[in-house]
Length: 227
Length: 227
DNA sequence: AGATTTATTCAACCACTGTTGAATAATGGA
DNA sequence: TCCATTATTCAACAGTGGTTGAATAAATCT
Image 1 (cartoon, rainbow over the protein chains, first blue to last red):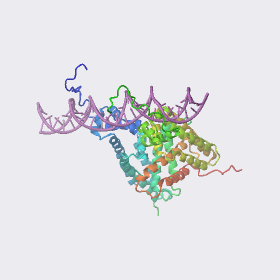
Image 2: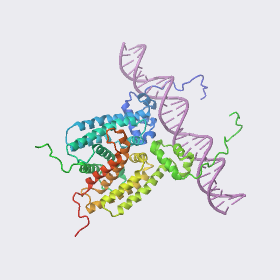
Image 3: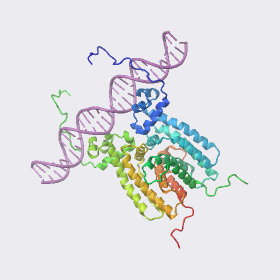
């Protein structure tokens, strides 16, 4: 102030450089996931993510290209565990019913505590966001193919009703499962006229039974090809 | 430019006031709905909404309190037609199957060309946005109550399986229907291994058949109380 | 016609946005 | 121990965000 700033006082010439050490990019991703979930795609600010991760905003640009690429990195991280797991279920040879249970297990891992973030992803999908969609279609296609395979096998073996179409049932199965995982926990707290138990397990069980009755072949073939 | 702006030239003292006349608030709401759908809650700027509606941003603050209130007004407009329609279905006395068809008709009207906007609404629900949730819980509760009634009646009449719980089936029915309406159109264009027909009608029919098989009582009572 | 109310626009405010270039502390190798 | 690389921070830029107060045209009323 009073000093007339003789030539070029860089204001505080000795305070830069690391203070926290070794910030793992995965910590930034964790922070980003929460902030995206809470604020949405556009509402999530780089500064908020950095604050939550405990570092400077500029650091994000050292580890990632920009905000969108943080988002796509997040997608990649999530699908990298889901896709192979589903593919291995599709290649196992258990009964269709058992495979569905395994698929549900994998999906349950995928959705864990994550409704907010997945709502953002859904937004990007339905509005076909240019920068995100390319990174989404590939894993989603793989997920859908794996599920389609499972249902196609069930059709071929006669475990499932012959009037079904595997790719469509795959849509229905995954879509409705995720829907229940997201919406029931979000809504049931506000519905006063409900039984006094946790809704989600009840809804999940009822949905699975319902769905199975809807697709199972009422006259199943002999369980093993028996003379 | 060249004029040195003598003392206080209010820059252009005669250009204010209306140019377009009588901008209906509903036009602003239409514009807002598209922009919210395309850009998300935080990404939708007041300026973008105004541009789309063809008016000045400040006008939005004459007709509405602020951005959030535009959003809640939008919600109100949508639910004002859905809720009574569902309630009247619940009070009619057709067969349960017929009532479900009517519910679907009402829901189809509700979802029409609107996936983007509903994705935003879903985001607000799952993240429990403070300013929006209060305006959502009431209509959502009414929707859920109406559907619950329909299923409860079906249970009482023996049209539906006795091991179901009406409020939960209500969740499943509405949730999964909306899910299919949103996700199938958004995803199927990117799935190369699909039959070459429009997916949505197929998926919708298959889902309804599946759902009905899942909830219908396999030993239905006499259609009218007989002797 | 004149006055009042209603509907609209303009210009500006400040807080915050994504992003970058330069400065620098910590780390690891020679 | 010195040096090069890596990881981090600071400060700033230019743009955009929601929002408001004053100005004013159009519509309505008397």
